[in-house]
Image (tube, rainbow, N blue to C red; front, side, top):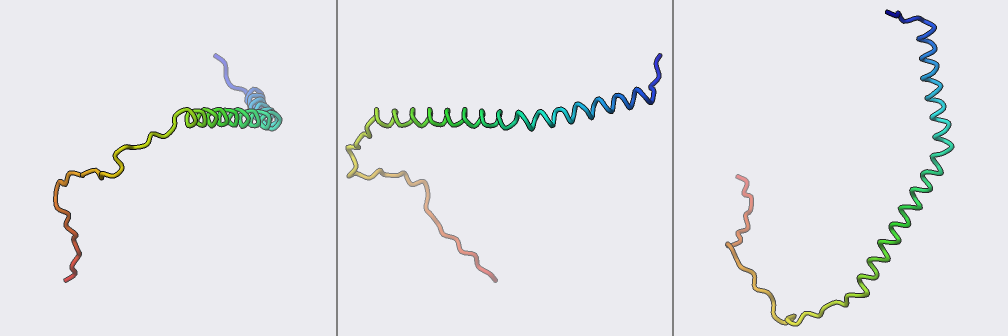
Length: 88
């Protein structure tokens, strides 16, 4: 059975701190490139969707309704009663 030693513990802490700072430095270098690439991809998808939407609108002309003069009759279910609050 092995016991923990102080030099081993300090070495482990230094390795963890080193990895942390290496990650921070690499993130500062590579994150702008990754974010720029993500924004370009999102812009490309947006333009493609906008183009598809415009093509759909151009292909299908609006259908004129033939019975614009006759209003639709709504079925009345009950009588509307307006309540007022009375303070006594």
